[in-house]
Length: 390
Image (cartoon, rainbow, N blue to C red; front, side):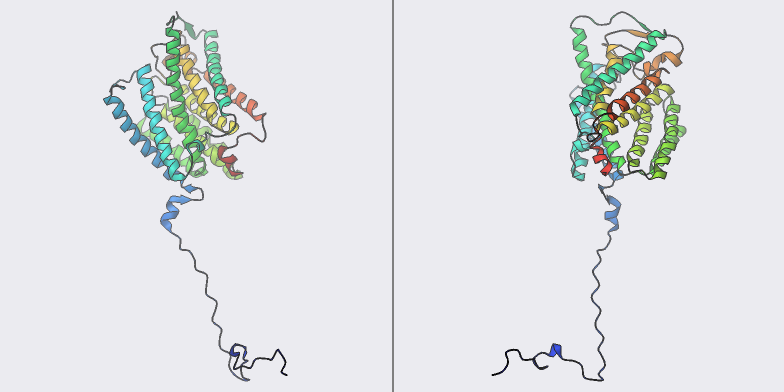
């Protein structure tokens, strides 16, 4: 009986056959190299680590914002909701003019969000305690403007006149102006502290942000656009050293503060076209834009900034009846008039053009930091891109 396990002969298992003595070994073929995925340079131009590159997002948003704004403005003009050539600050032009901008902004942001596979709320509108933050922003804006008015009155730089409204008109105009300035807060904060701040924070480095700020200043130098341009130069210069230090430290949060520097400078730049602005008013607009960026950082969303912005403008324009960026509106509650040196009274610029606005704005910043930095270590500033991913 043969054993169950017999060794196989070379004929039955040629793969196990050994080479004959003295035979040359055949060279083994090298293993195939792994296939490399070709780099598509066109994809690299448009897509980065976080999806669509920030620059393209901004360009698409701006183009769509202008396109939608023109289309909606055309419809509003044809339906006589807006009167062509009416540039006066009143409830009708204010409300429907801001509504055009609001709808254009939402439409543009919705398209970009769809392209980026985000939600509109991702643009600094999520985060904890959104409703309380909005109402605390309302209170802060009214209180800060009231403090500024009180300082002007105490110094003799602002005088009260007779009440301009009476009876039910007080409440009707109050509600109407509240609607106007809520839209103003949503539009200006929605573009600056929501879309642009969020988007630029993921795409800027120090040198690119410095180049954008320098381009803004060069544009003002070449074209001498508007009034109070030194206010823009001042906020641009103040941001150089802090942002450079963040760059040298390679801080993970540097992108957010680069974006805050750029958007605040641009916010001041945007106010240079207003009538009656001086350099203090322009600087204040840029500086309070930075304060609103800080509010996004410490609260986790732009809701505090929206509320503060709306209440500040409402108190300034309607409640106290002062000039706002050079405009005095009809339908205000109280009547006031500036007196004394423009440096202190603000002149035609209104309270925002007074030197007293600077300590008030600094106080607002300090209180913002003190109140919100003392709270919620786990809750603080989440999201803000989930605290810039880490």
